[in-house]
Image 1 (cartoon, one colour):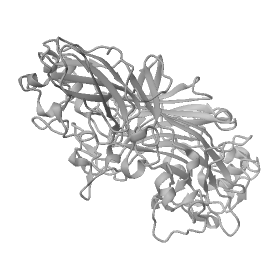
Image 2 (tube, one colour):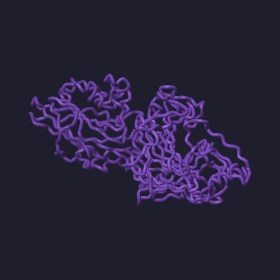
Image 3 (tube, one colour):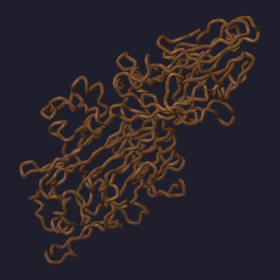
Image 4 (cartoon, one colour):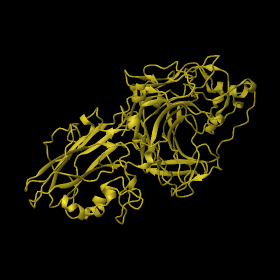
Amino acid sequence: MKALLGLIPLVLLGCADGGHTNDSNVDRFEVLTNWHTNGTDGVKSISMDYTEAIDSGFTIPSVQQVEGGHFAFSFTVKDPTGKGRAFKYKLYYRNESYKMDETRPDGAQHPLAEENFYGSWESASEGFRTTGPTQGDEALNVEDGFRIHGDPRDEERFMQDGKRVRWARNPRVGVYSFLLVAVPEDAYAAARIPDAVARINEQESGHFIEPYWYFLHGPGAKLPEVAVLEAKEKLKVTARPPLGAGIYVEETEGISTGAFNDACGQTAELRKQAPFQQFIHYVDPSTRFANIPLIADVLGNAYTPEDHDFNRCFFPENKMVSLRPMTTKAPCETVRSNPDNNTIELRNPASTPNDLRKENVGVRSRSGLMYGKYSIKCKLTPLLNDSDMWVGLTNAIWLIYQGAPGNHRRTCSKDGFLENYYGGDKDKRVPQVDYAEIDFEILKTPLYCPDVTFPPLRPQQVAVPGERANWQRPKEGGIPKGMITVACTNWDMACHSPVNFASGCSDISHNGQTFQSQRWDDNYRALTQKIFEPDAELFRGDHYWFQIDWKPESVTWRIGPDLDNLREVGYMDSTITSISDVQMQLIVTQEFHNTKWWPGSPYDQGYIPFAAKDYTGVIQEVIIE
């Protein structure tokens, strides 16, 4: 009998659900018997433990959650021949929520099935384990254990400096199923189970064999004396990063440590436990712009659209201040992790006459995940005042590639990806890249579709002080008063492989809605959809939810006042854009964009004053499932 040290002896037995059995009489397959959470329909729940996730990746369960850090499982075997035979057995697990189809129409393994997240024993090179011998025709109860961990196939690509980095292929969130395969020991050789199935680190003809496909749909489903059972129990894994556990500051040469504190900095404890780090924006030199040297409480109604238009028409250009959006002078000064209410605060600092600055602020998660439904509850800074004047901020919630070892996007079969994020039209095309990004960006800007004449031409201004009509700026693109624009963007690096790849404006339908997508040209690296939403609803209440539902073949963007009342505001799938398949991290920011990034915006960032008061946003909850 196989047992794990520290596991509680198992006494509850039941029947497996699904699969197939035969005269080997393998029965009563149960998993998760030492995890006592209340589940519905046989689905138990667990949250990822962030305690050791930075260096080791997530393990499910952790030693903090279950003694010994393993789930228990059991089954019974009975030898109807009465010979007292031992049995060979193996347990597999697989993420069901974010998997590719395992079977082609002809029954062969689907080419993308090997991308699925599945595993077995702690060491991927370990094959089938062996039970003790049965006694006559009595059932033998077998107890064992397993855990779900990163890089379950022990792949060479997830090595760095000669060391395995399991965090580079972390477990996925979502629902996991469990499969047991057992065969009498003396029949194992005759079954001829491939090495690439028995030891999941092995490959056959350069490819992994997906064990669920092999045993449920492939040759393994018809092997004599091989029992295949699917457990009725399933496990739902979620990630809820503890926002109050601190913010880490990555090692950066020459940074100021003057604002470091117990909840933000570079201590060993924060390095180990903090789920977020301060995000220091890369500020591209091309984002420089001239700004009016005025400090005003725009959000407090001290500046209006008329003020903006007057200054744009009359303020001397040689008196403007040349600057770029800035980053913090002292990390931890503008971000705060609050353990009392488990939140993170973001603060764009106010300016003073001797320190005029439009400073970006944000945080970035430190552990990467592939796929998931990211739900972010937050109260970010309102973007409009009562006169409909924009404060100049862009509130953004986005996912960005982690840059983990071994993470490259699936090959772009048609023309390749453009190699660099900042490259132009002449950029080289390559089969694979690691860059990926999925965004919510929310600001005051027009819709781009349907494309009539775009970008709009800026009308000629006439400097006649008493005639308001002459202080021209672009038409507001039909933006109703009080509305801001929610832009949903997928960065696909201009891969032309999707069957409906297109530039300009095009439609895609989903759940009874039609979404208009826009791409500037065939070499533009992103696809965007936009919708008007009321600023007061999104940012003036106690909170609002923003959700990015990232699946292997699609991305859906949703917003709403609570999780039970979300509405879709964007949808893209792999027919129109290349969906990211690398680990990504979550970023939440409040930032000052150069409005040249957003052609047609009714306000020019350069004629929006510097803030007289801090702009503060709060991240209240993050759920990834």
